[in-house]
Length: 109
Image (cartoon, rainbow, N blue to C red; front, side, top):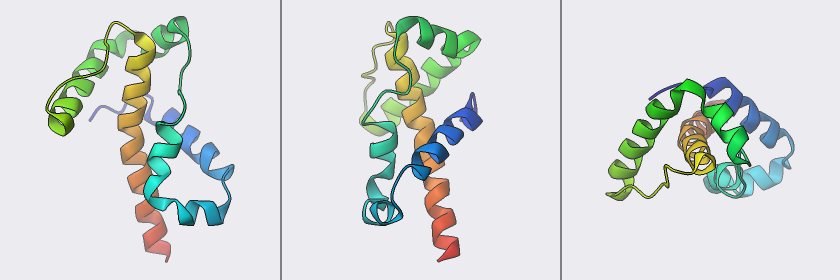
């Protein structure tokens, strides 16, 4: 999996976690990914999304195609919309970040 802007996305998740109540995190541990990466947009605006994608846009599109085919059997993301491309990519990378976070919580417990 590509690691484009991984640290930026991870930092976004850490900031989001800090804003949450610890009890809420415990009660919603199975839905952290959804709440952080699917209930709001990471990037809003076509210009901002194009800038964010930079020269990695085709690598990101390939990753999204592979992910959606593997998980849904078809591709649904509208690749003509840079905002949708960014947000789907962040959603995918977010799965790995949340999984790592949950694993760390289990190791501490």
